[in-house]
Length: 342
Image: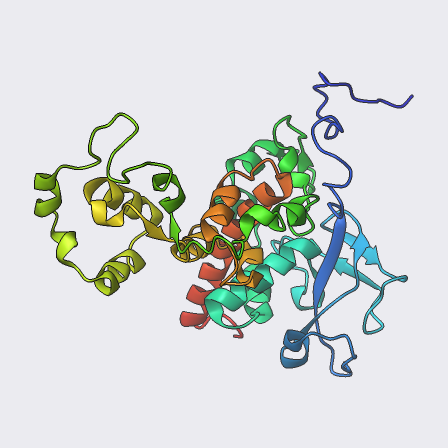
């Protein structure tokens, strides 16, 4: 008998199709591995730079449980490697882990590549390999690592059984969403509202709202936005525009919001400022880096990004990005301590 979930289904044996679509979950069971090269390893045309420059290479992509099993990739083999063992954990002293593949989701590895390149200046697969060797115990990997609360909620260790059991808790569906290929996300980014038209090349945010007023210094209620006495006491009124821009360049989005409450000088903000805030506040929003700098209405892009968490894939991307940031911080520390490549 097949169980088909309805709108009120509370089964934890799987995620309900009422809450997450099959398209959103694309690739959630896909698995790829990092493998240490053997002495007879030869490069192939599709190798990435880090594969050519390091002692490690990627396998093909398969579908398998993530740990303690042989993986057969006969249909997607790379470098004549189609059958091998993969372990997440390294707490068995009888096993030579130099010969055991390091498994991950291809989408998660894509995020690792971006974070590693951003923080370390390279795709440090050697550091990733040694991080597993140094922190691959169950306690370090599943208990002590600062994971998202949703992950801690759904993972449950089964006594005397090696594989953790995944509880499909309602509300945690985003954990299974593809963080790279997000349905509908590209349509949001291509929204004409995110680009400035040639007829209204506004360089400032909030200017459009004040233009609706007959007197920009007066509110809809007929009262001044600020009094002359307050205006004259504002030290920022004496700053040249270039210096005001330098002040903005040093502040976070929260600090800028507070500054706008304290000084009328910053009531209007340059549109390009929101590109910097977007890349700093949401570094996982890498699509913004590829948008045309001059034509984008960065305030509209920033505003949309703040309210696009209906995309489960983007929620998951943010979660994975934070995990990978922590992994990369640890890789950097282990390199400084001389524990990578020992």
